[in-house]
Image (cartoon, rainbow, N blue to C red):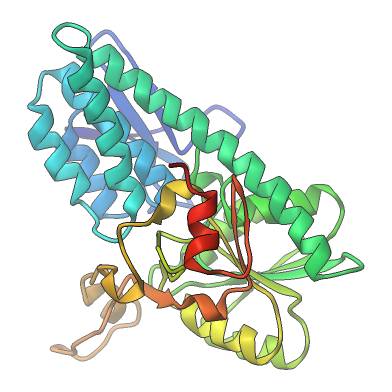
Length: 350
């Protein structure tokens, strides 16, 4: 069961939090489909509600999906549901983001190892540990990414182009790529953030602008197909994006529209940087061709602007950027550049 309620308090609303009211534990998530017009929270009292929130993109973004998966196992255990069934439903709610399955697996392992009577506490503790780990990773990536920007764009005053949304809405901290942008902004080195709309669901237009405005950044929204004009005019110093899965060879899956940006950046000799925690790296996936790409409903495209009845739509949620187009991958454990299998494996925990 899930209910919506508006949270009237001032200040940023966390993307996800665990609460324990008298009627039983719940997972509360900020409904990102309602932003920026409304700041409304969705209260998930069971795994079915959480799976629905994930599939409809009320909860989204690779690191946050990992947290949702871990907390979802704790919720199932606390509410007396079958943990194995919950794990199956959560892990397959969206196929591309590896963090979702990773978070589920960590919480399930903790639940099973704790034994009878301690499983709920163990699963919740693991979810909270992952939450803290993600926040720490976000801070580390921000620091390392800001240092990399200084090397790639001497003189500061960065004009950064980004795609989709990679801020606090997708993380236990300030995000991935957006955390680097935030660090540059706080240091007074962000001249302009260029924000792709990110069609068809407009995560850039709705969510990145929401976070940029809240932070007081200088930002400009652009149609996705206007990015080439910016490159031609010499208005982009670097491209910073996140990732939903990184294969062993360094290929990255990210929101559809990322690959064309990488091609543009390569042609115009502009650094293209991926920022993602090591929990997004999947060394068991050899290369980009082995990453399953989520295909979403065609109605997301045809309903954006009414199309003739019966119009078919091609709507992949992600595309693949090969390593030869990536200048560097910023992780919490170090910067991978050049992007190769050995250099990527070197920053990943054993």
